[in-house]
Image 1 (cartoon, rainbow, N blue to C red):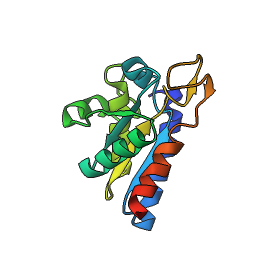
Image 2: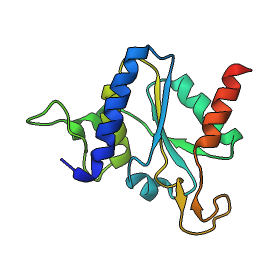
Image 3: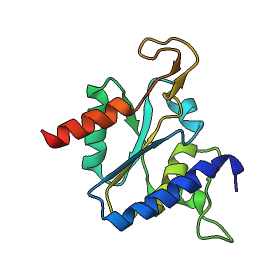
Image 4: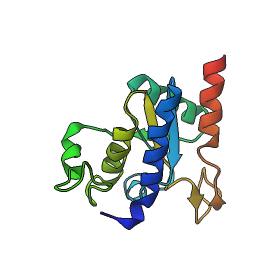
Length: 154
């Protein structure tokens, strides 16, 4: 449906492949949508997932790393937007709730294990110096991943 959404097709393949390893949890990050920039700007990551505890732990890890996120809902109401007349599912649900519908597309391929997605389109790169973000590539969400792992091993 949208050739600009090709990255989520690759990510869907990776999420499906991860099942082979029976993961305890999967956390991925990508510049999934420009829609997250419209909704959250350049200071917050969009955070969506299938397991409330895992989402909470990722948000807490991000806060410890000063890489803040905001949880967006993966409510069933939005699934209607990615239904297709010809395929099993569409890779885009249109402009409305674009970040949420993109994550709902990925959720289909992450079935069977706890999963969290970080949409870092707004935070991965900054065109200006902001209070908490320097101009240029930011390295976000590396600190979130580090803090998440630290919490799991302590």
